Amino acid sequence: MTSSVLRVTLDQPFADQKPGTSGLRKSSRQFETPHYLESFIEAILRTVPGVAGGTLVVGGDGRYGNLRAIDVISRMAAAHGVARLITTTDGILSTPAASNLIRKHGAVAGIILSASHNPGGPEGDFGVKVNGANGGPAPESLTDAIYACSQTLDGYRIVEAPSISLEAPGQHAIAALTLEVIDGVDDYLALMQQLFDFDQIGDLLRNNYPIAFDAMHAVTGPYAKRLLEGLLGAPKGTVRNAVPLEDFGGGHPDPNLTYAHELAELLLQGDDYRFGAACDGDGDRNMILGRRCFVNPSDSLAVLTANATLAPAYADGLAGVARSMPTSAAVDVVAKQLGIACYETPTGWKFFGNLLDAGRITLCGEESFGTGSNHIREKDGLWAVLFWLQLLARKRTSVAAIMADHWSRFGRHYYSRHDYEAIASDRAHGLYDRLKGLLPSLAGERFAGRAIATADDFSYTDPVDGSLTTGQGLRLLLDDGSRVVFRLSGTGTQGATLRVYLESYVSPEGQLQQDPQLALADLIQAADQLAEIKLRTGMGVPTVIT
Ligand code: VG1
Ligand code: CO
Image (cartoon, rainbow, N blue to C red; front, side, top):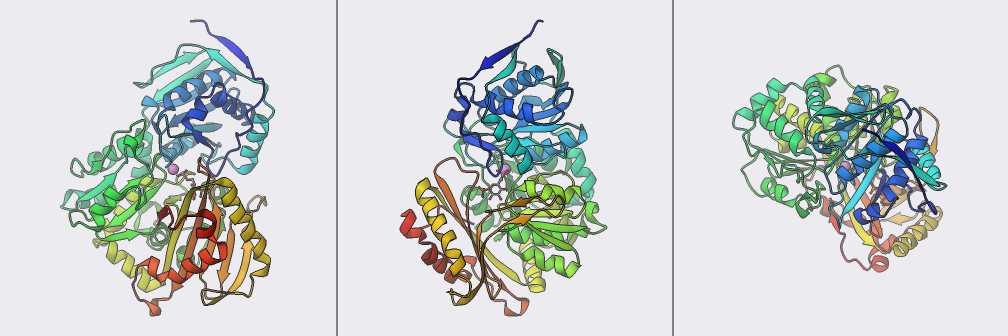
């Protein structure tokens, strides 16, 4: 078979290829614009070190556009002299499994095709994420360089060759490139078996301990089927919505109480299941539910930290932990008691990479349903589910009892995130910039019956490489330890999304179990008043409350 390299000239570069919190995320339609996907891939292949002669990993969450993108990337990788490209059957590869493959095969990078929890399909979103050789999301220095390259791009190179079927494992040649199609699930399952006691978890699940897992028609379906119903022996039907669909069945593959409400109702209103969980589009997020009990993700990180030694992989204890700034300080309290370091990073998994690589932390997490460890360099939805099942198998108690016990030992961080989605961009930025302008005058002012101790725009100096990241969210730290944080999302594709994070601590002695929305009511009201949210957005209530 002959194949030749085609050089395509661009009239002008695309102006809008700046990666956000998690890669380049745009509408599927935008990605279908001629040369749009190709341009961004060209910028990646020109910028990532070691591409020529190296190994790359590519795959995605199965959404509309996944197979076309793999075909384009394969032929462009061939044109750039990549020696080996590893992809998976049907191109299905979760973000955590991709991180594992990059590490296992010594790849120079990975390209993950997903817009994560954003809806998919021709009218939904598509995304391209770049991960580095450590398996983690590219650091800002690399994404900035890719963006800079995309802004001066004059053209791209692609091999002209027929597209290759990914239906079965096998090896193919595209010019001098070897395309390896492997099973995307095998290696991930093997890794999980090294971390947890499968006999113990299996013993729980085989003996009248009904659980429900919702794959939301996204990437975790095939993984969860083999893991839960296969290796661990849970009854058939445990995994719901297990078949990945190009449009996620019309759903929004975001595991929270709003978008995974069917599962939430099963657990919070019914008595059929002891444990429930869901993952997002690309499998890196997790929501944990018990019977009549929702586990806040910030609390989940704290509980896993407090009980880590119950899992074989963490039996020797933890080096340290980290959480993103808006995540509640529940884990800080546990870390203090354990006598281990606790780091506070900006939003986005890329900021955990250096800490994990340097061995400073073992576990880390974000309030946005992200939890993970040093086993890979991405957050890992099914890993978190297994970790919780490991705790339940060891403790033989309920999720609600684990939470009550945790709060009685460490106190409780009432926590909520209010999202205002699809606000007109100028309004959202007007609101945010006004608030930022107010910050210098706020210290010492009263707020919800407390005094504002600090009002600032969060910035972070990476303790490993010294790099500085600024403008990461407006914080009001109150004198009783409560906090309100305002951020603009970097993953949305329509208008702007304002996130308001609210937190208030009650010590073990002051316990009065109540609904977080009630416990935080005064902060919620004061935040609205100060930021003029209702007034400026015209929205009476948030789109999503977590
Ligand atoms: C959101 C979350 C953030 C997470 C990011 C990517 O970003 O808040 O914690 O790391 O999504 O998650 P933002 O900028 O919209 O707040 V995923 O599951 O897309 O990889
Ligand atoms: Co995700």
